[in-house]
Length: 354
Ligand code: KG4
Ligand code: ZN
View 1 (tube, rainbow, N blue to C red):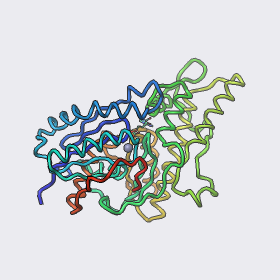
View 2: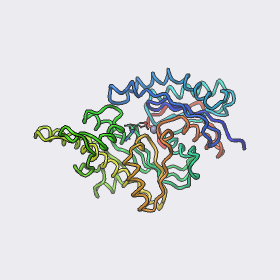
View 3: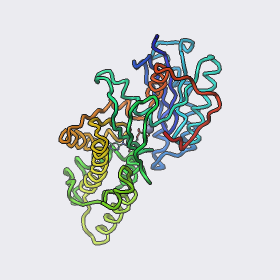
View 4: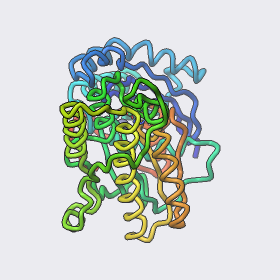
């Protein structure tokens, strides 16, 4: 069968992503981000994101078509994220996708954003083909999810997820506590590598300087929440520690706080992901989501996975952060596996289950 040419639309958060793929081949991955508009609020503002999608969609689709050197009329199918994500933001993408599918008289595929993140891996031309089953850890500003993937096109189990803040959100909140700008992830990385020593100088932070809590990893938690994550207690612990030091007149090393906080997040993410690999006898771990940009996370994941005999896959960062190409890739995979399109009856579902 001919490989389908699919246009994917992603608007679940603050990136307007349009991607075009043919089969598993990436033709374009075009992104317009409203991140700058959210920066002064310290996090994504849903209403602002939805308006930005509405403005960005048309030019981003045109840019993606130009980059892929295809005409709209050549598209075989349209794909769109129908959830999970911000309701208003999703609605803009779903509305646009329906309009496009009707105007072109082409099939429309509604796909799950989290499964889309996994499908991003298919587009990594430099990697050997994805093998099943695999454990997948998705970490971004909006989600922290651990999945067991037996088949992308129909057999994906959600093993666990965050019960409060997402990992990226925790980075953003701690950055704010430390007086660093949004988005916090890269800033925390930077501060941990070379941040204030609290005495007027800068140095690398010590990841063991402060022992911050690893959420849901006590023996009692592990029975019920073996694969779940919690970062709100960590956030509170960091805030309280900084307050106490300030109150006592002790110098606070931003480098040490950043490095110790990052270590706590990374430790619990990697520990739980590798526990899932061991429990299910799956020696493969796929990483996705914007937090994968974290240098320490990659380092610890690769080190500990190697020790456990687990192979780690990390697609290029441009495919790990929210994008339309992964949405197109998932629909393309569905088409090639013989799945029919969605009916027009679907809407945006901010809590869409796997
Ligand atoms: O996947 P993404 O681009 O968008 C969604 O949230 O869906 O992820 C953005 C998140 C932000 O919370 C940002 O702080 C975090 O990823 N992030 C990082 C790093 N770079 C971005 N977190 C930790 N370390 C980083 N280097
Ligand atoms: Zn995402």
